[in-house]
Length: 428
Ligand SMILES: [Zn+2]
Image 1 (cartoon, protein in one colour):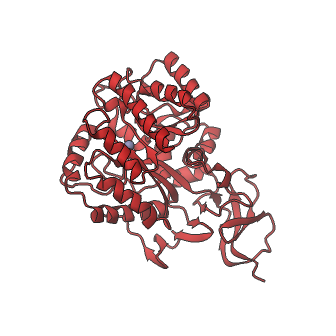
Image 2 (spheres, helix red, strand yellow):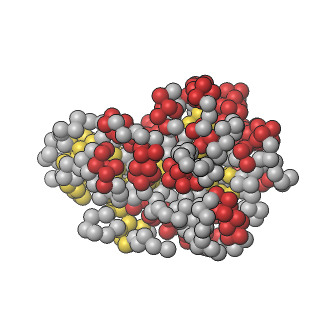
Image 3 (cartoon, protein in one colour):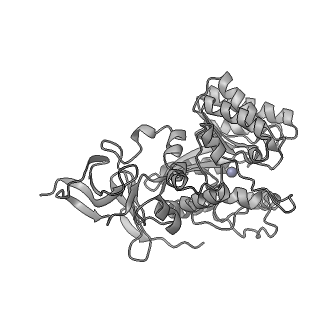
């Protein structure tokens, strides 16, 4: 007798005893039942063969506007942030809505196939036509069957560096962006940096939006805009609504200072979002050997009680030439760079691309593999978190809202899109 829409058998479930397997029964978009019993049936049945089922991944920081533009108009030969910015300034001139959306469509298919179902993208608001913002706001609706997108209005060149930039930032929120961004370390002085943080919070408060900044993305130990972000969070009672991307300078801060500020950030509920692939690639470029690692110290932040989630930042663009959108690759880099290699640390590390992202998105209550929660799941290629990090992606199956979205069995990647299955190729 058919009872459920979808039944997954022989599943190990993250957070449950690892020596047992379960049956997960899905009805509509919800997980109806999780049981050790095996005699349950569904319209579609998947044998998980003892592999680990986890909730899908979050990519808490990304730039969809520049994604898959690698080599246009030229390659970044020095591998520096500055050559990347110069190349993007040229590429931006040729940006159109259609060509951007076709790149975004391809990129979000890659990400969905690799198990990411939530992505926070920045949209460059210093691109004066705001094609970036309009296009990415449109992408949210266009690609909602593949992935959940939030758009952060991101003043790439600064808020105070040009007279119209603050206005463009606010206009982007009116055009439908979800979060307010900032880049205080890119303002001309530290005073302007502090002022720009206040302006971003003013806009966020006015429109009741969350804050999602690029903060202190530099190796400069005196880059300390993060403390202003934390202060404003207290001042405006914005607890739990603020995320600071990168914060790479915190790697180089004096430990006494870092401990104090991280403690305050934890109290204010300010999240930190390192981007390990890009941080290890772009930071430390002015250093001789030995080179600093240039990633926010995740272990210390977690010890102080800060919520830490990871971002992929870029895939095949002027800043990062590699990537397929696999958050397991991001996590793999993070655990190496920060030496989160203890057994318990490796087991816990998956939180950085799952539940900690859900906290930033404010959906912890409906997120996870539990009865009554939304039926979003990955069946990974391994029996535990260590296997997942050894073998990496893509997962065997991706389930979104109770239905099969991606199937990576049988030697190829397939995605269910616009009513049919299609093959996904990982090339430009
Ligand atoms: Zn970024």
